[in-house]
Amino acid sequence: MVGFARSNTALPTQLALASKLPNKFAVCIPSSTENGFGTIFIGGGPYYMPPYPNDMSHSLITTPLITIPVSRPPVLTRSGGPSAEYFIGVKSIRVDGKLVPLNASLLAIDKNGIGGTTLSTVAPHPLLATSIYEAVINAFVKAAASRKMKRVKSVAPFGACFSSKTVLVSTNTGPPVLTIDLVLQSKTKYWRIYGANSMVKVGKDVLCLGFEDGGSNPITSIVLGGHLLENYLLEFDLASSKLRFSSSLLLKNTTCSQSRIF
Image 1 (tube, one colour):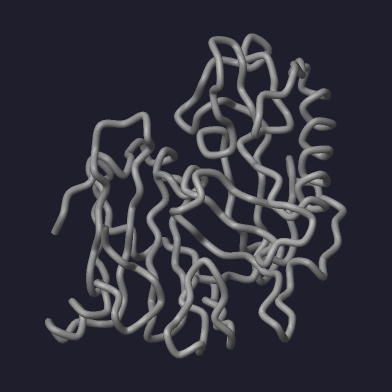
Image 2: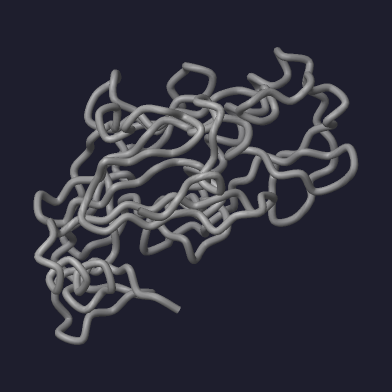
């Protein structure tokens, strides 16, 4: 087990200090259905993800990493100081390009460190506070109906499942379902989620929207779990407190499992 928390004792920070490299690292998490180990870059780019020929560091989207002044579970600092988690500022959510009506105050972080959006490889799937979860599910189901996607009985822990027979043949980015956008600082800066990261196959002919209900009063309103992070290149720049991330590598006909360690 290797620690990547936002702390001075984390492996990337220790390696950067020991080698006098910039205090940044990047991870690329492969899909659980692939044969590969993914990639870790210490000290920054360039980032080459074969067979895609270009350095991906020039096309990454940048958003601030938010510092929470209080330490909270599941990652607690010994001093009780700032949280060691990685938070980003999600301002709104869109399904199929349309804004999802939800309580925007839950997306903010209050003075006690409650709310907000964090990234986690511990949670297998995204966890959303109940009201956000229900709003996203309802928006997705409504839009899916217009695409003639047949809803079937839900399979726990997911709340919206569909017959894969009513979904067109899979594309490079997975099942061609509705895109989900996590809107960041502006309407033009967002994290787009395609079918490969939003849908989970739970049976021979059943696909479920891979979001889970995180409860009505969670400490964190949105936890972006592992399945959602697969096949995106994520650079954590701790010196400037910024997250830089790629679009889905599947759009470039490559994956994290095909990359190489440099």
